[in-house]
Length: 294
Image 1 (spheres, one colour):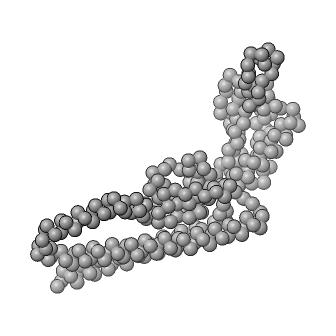
Image 2 (cartoon, helix red, strand yellow; image 1 turned 180 degrees about the vertical axis):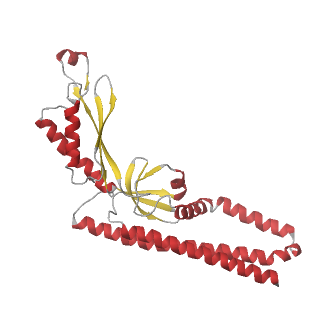
Image 3 (spheres, one colour; image 1 turned 120 degrees about the vertical axis):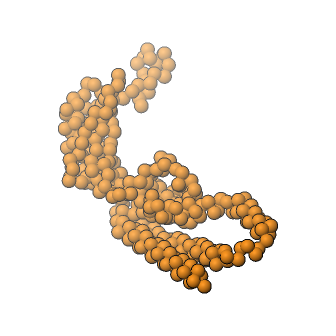
């Protein structure tokens, strides 16, 4: 009798602990989504865009609640099965080992073939939820696709790409795939622009101009100064980088676009030409000095 009372009390305490942890985690995820002011890979001031982002947020909050409800129910079923097994354990010696083996083998075969992909994705969904590798609203780059995690279901993850297409990834593959999470710790990032100049260009003048344009960018955070680097010197050109600190991935995208437009305009004013490679199409064109610019 003492065995059963102690067992039930211990299992109840364990169940309550995990339920409390899940509730705390659910509040944390929902809070992140609600506090996310840039629920999109790009920044836009249009009314339609803002309404779409608002609907995406509402859907995300609803799906987070549904996901945790499934996890809680799965936890309760697992807890119930464990409790039944432990309650019946003292009487296991009275059951036929042959019958028990048949049922166990049948269940294993069924799970191994019929439900394996589904169960794998369900388990992966639970692991993703508990591991905090990424959350709804996080801006990521996966397989060269740039977008925001719009939804995490129990079987798959949906990434809303910058062009509003949806990239659907099974949770098992999501666990295996390498990706960049721009908002895992915080949303700030160094937005980098890469460009090339010829050896005839004045590098110091280009550096001064790049830093000036970066500082004047409307999306830069001047708590840290923009930086300029010469990254490589080939036989044909000089590879340069300029980077500015931004407060979000969306601002980073806008920083790069604004910088390129302004920087190109300023280079033209100073008559500084970026480097071009010429690909000779054939020997005849080479004689005439005609080539294709890339």
